[in-house]
Length: 390
Image (cartoon, rainbow, N blue to C red; front, side, top):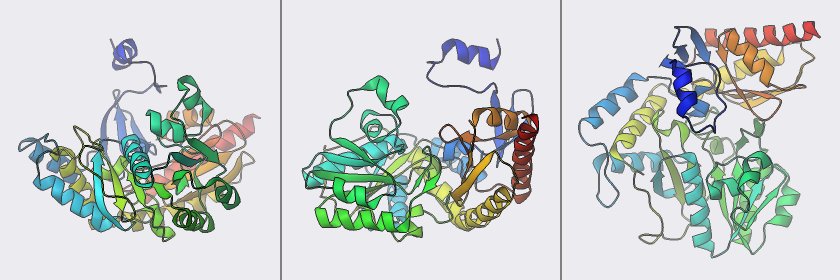
């Protein structure tokens, strides 16, 4: 049986798979089982900022795997200590502590628990179109009904307000609100950056009313938007910042950066068996070191502005708007995006949807400008071919 046939026989069924079996990657390129090469603008859904098979990360993993792979946090560890120190040094908020976990959803779950624990309140205000994960707490903060409806009732106490609407936020945040959770740029919700007024207004409201501000930087962290974290574009100082995806160069890892307004956390209030394991921490130190050495945030800013400029110059009645931040780019179409993703894939370009009609580009930040030119040219060809057919 082929790779696809074996997976189709035994996989859970919860994933919609594309008809490709990927077996190798390098930088911003992937190869399938037949040897065909693709330019990857899926980028591990944001987990491949430093590129596939990054040598620095691979070497760190190999060395640590021969030393110590797993160690729970009931013991101290050199790699964990170094990783925590590094995260606090680069944190976009006034963090002085960090909780290490295994994924973005876990980082969000921890932030929700810490907000409730600190305030003694239960209410969580989230945003319409927001996406924060699929575990029960993170799912309760997520807005899209197709993710939520099969699992109701969800965790009580969650409400949703329009994104980037400060008046609605002012009405929703009360003395019952434990935390307000927001993406700096809504990814799954259509690649929509928040305004400075909205984010800083949320921060002021949370300070005024005793709630914790939770910034979801799972997709926007580690150079993606042109800064190490998207919060830095706004001078935002969230009480809790959830990060993951590219934190460890593709290894499963998450972290919750804990600000000074968060209450002291008592032993056993939360935990994770694999959180902060030496292998992930070694990968994380190598990945962050590579991001800093190669100045990937500045690279993302430059290449993102270039790519968005080229996309905005495409003359096509199919395009409604091009928006984004750094190398997190969305092309909103006037039609459903799925057929265009398939057409791009046939031409060797891999991209993501963001909702029903937004084409999302999340390439590794090491991608070459020449590859981005090919990506834009291919998008233009696909859109124009579709328009000609109509």
